[in-house]
Image (cartoon, rainbow, N blue to C red):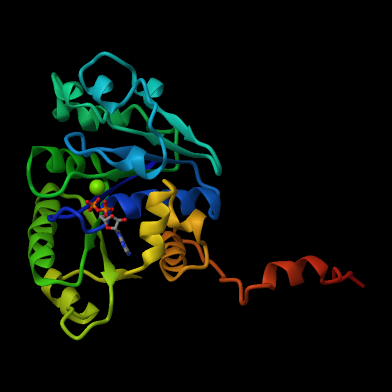
Length: 260
Ligand SMILES: Nc1ncnc2c1ncn2[C@@H]1O[C@H](COP(=O)(O)OP(=O)(O)O)[C@@H](O)[C@H]1O
Ligand SMILES: [Mg+2]
């Protein structure tokens, strides 16, 4: 069965694309699932940039104009089997795009992946709503501040009205400063659990400069560890964290226990 999970927010710049790139990488790498990440933010597409994919002759845009088949817009992200469907970076490629076709287009991928993650446009406009409609489940990305939280409340209501299951809130860029909303306050306002608290982490910005997800650039950074925990929750699998820096090496040299 293919799960289609929309990564949604009311406000832009809260971390949706970061969550999609990192979650997709971890689910493919550590949990060995077939994952496709799709840039559904057609008007201001970034997912390909975050993954270093610049030369993509066929994109979701051509699929939504009816000029290409979805299979021709899938690119292998080199390391761990993650696949990506980027949107075009060119303004002229917006012409003729029919975002209403998104749901039926994604349906053509059923059976071709375990998990499809959709990187949504922000807000409640047509583009963002097309992603909610195309998804079976949604995860809301929020920051610990009032404006983004207010927008998520609306997004949650819309998802409920559309009959889409809300998995919870990812609270991103958390600094634990006094002026930030706490997890409890966010949960009370949105009426959903906070399923992950991702810290503000400079490694996320460093990894962006190198065009790769932080989970691959700096797997031991605080944000990477949290992305792994979040991925485990989403796939419903237990993940036992390695205990120390040298645990992998020690494991290698440890004599194998022989059965009596
Ligand atoms: N946990 C984090 N710590 C530091 N910077 C982050 C974090 N999450 C995202 N960012 C940065 O914030 C900016 C906006 O993130 P992005 O994923 O593009 O948001 P959205 O897709 O919601 O617009 C990017 O520059 C990204 O690198
Ligand atoms: Mg984005």
